[in-house]
Image 1 (cartoon, rainbow, N blue to C red):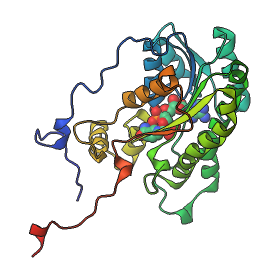
Image 2: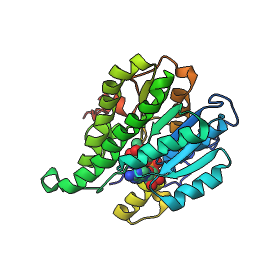
Image 3: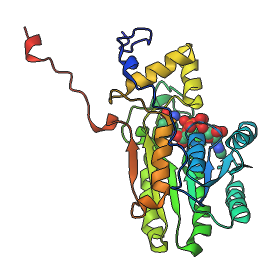
Length: 296
Ligand code: NAD
C-alpha cells in the first residue's frame, strides 16, 4: 500500500510544513552589478533562480528553447531580465546567447547551465532502452552543459574571473531514483565540474554544481500526472512526503538560494564542489529492522 498521506488529515506529516517556506529573501545586494546567463530559465528551478538573482542585484539573460514561456518569464521578471532563444543542443545558439550577454552588459560573471530534460519517464527495463532517446537526453543534459561551459569560459578567461554553475541531481548520486538515461546524464555532471576545474582554476574561474532533491516543478508534475493520472496537488504532496527532512519541503527557492551563494563572492574559494540540496536524502538508507519490542 502507499505510505503517502493525503493532505486532508491535519495530523498528516504534510501539515507540519512551515507555511513560510516559499517566501523570497527579499531585496539584497549579494549579486549587485553581476551579469548572469541561465539556461532553461523559462520555468522551474531556472526561473526561480533568475528571480532570486535579480532580487540580489543581477542582470539576467534567460536562455531557453521555449520562446513563448521564455519571453513571458522575462516580461514577468522585469527590466533586469532579457530573453534569448537558445536550444542548448545547438552550439551556435549557445555561443550567440553568451555573446548577447557580453554585447548588452559588457561581461558575463555567472553562467548557470540548468536546462535539462528527463526523457522517457519509466522505462520498464534497461533491456528495452531506446538508444535514440538516450542520445537525446545526453545531448541536452551533457552536451548542452559542455557547450555552455565552453562558451562561458571563452568570454570569462580574459577577465580572470567568473562563476559557472550546473544543475546536477540526486539521480546522479544514487541509482534507482530516475530513468537510466536521465540518471546517467546527471552522474556525469560532478565529473564535468572536476574535469573542467582542473583547467579553469588557473584562469580564476570557479565551477560548481548543485544536486537538488525532487521538486514539483512543471516538468516533474506533468510527467508524473501522465503516469498516475491524478491531480497536481496529489503529485505535489506525494513528492513532499518523499523527503527525509521533516518540517520542511524542498522547493525551487531552495535551489535558487544555493545558486545565489555559489554565484556570489561569498563563495570565492568554493570550486569543484557538488552542493547537494536534498535534506540528507542521499546520506543514508533506512534499515528495515524490527525494534526489540516488536520481536515475538
Ligand atoms: P522545467 O521543465 O520546469 O524547466 C526546464 C527548462 O529547460 C524549461 O523551460 C525548458 O524549456 C528548458 N529546456 C529544455 N530543453 C532545452 C534545451 N534543449 N535548450 C534550452 N532550454 C531547454 O524543469 P526543472 O525541474 O526546473 O529542471 C531544471 C533543471 O533541474 C534540469 O536540469 C533538471 O534535470 C534539474 N533537476 C530537477 C529536479 C526536479 O525535481 N525538478 C531535481 C533535480 C534536478
